[in-house]
Length: 244
Image (cartoon, rainbow, N blue to C red; front, side, top):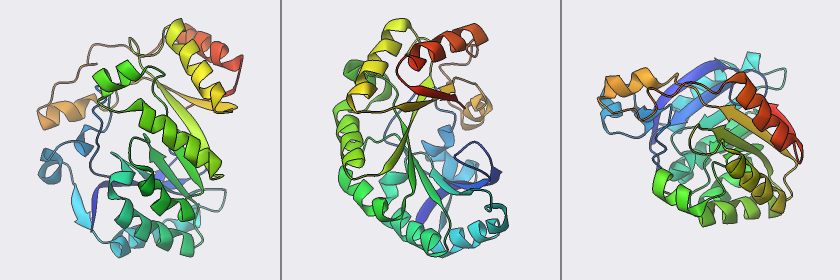
């Protein structure tokens, strides 16, 4: 069974075209800016629609939308961290591909590579979050292992997978010039040529209150347009830049 906390229909922010986004419960990281805190807590199971679902029942919901996928749309697995449920996610992924529907998988990449190997045969595109070039920040702020993330990115590229690097731009974490330049250097080493920038927002802040959680970024404003433009220009020296 899959642990799912939401299925969002007619999504336009999780890949190409109109998509159905399946949100998987559970995450092994603790990003303090996370806009899906219901993926992190047991409270979500009873409080915010998290439920156990068979792959067949999830597919039935997906197929309700397939008429909207004609212009390059499809399905995106998101989370939480999809790859923590790799075996069951792969079962659903096989069904999606057998239905001739495009599949994107959104991941932070901080899992053993065998989880990717389960999904690789069925995944068209990985939406790969690359949050910082600092191993110390990755460990102390996010609670993960950047060396593992880097190894997985290298192996995905070596295996010929289509990987889209998405960088969440978080004030006070990775938006200063030194952090941006370190990300540029890091990603250039992988031969990456395009990045997708995700400016910080507080759209998930109300969920923290619902779950009785403290939101560390409740007083942090969105990036100013001028700041975002300057960051985009800095990345544009080495990459094609898209802003989501």
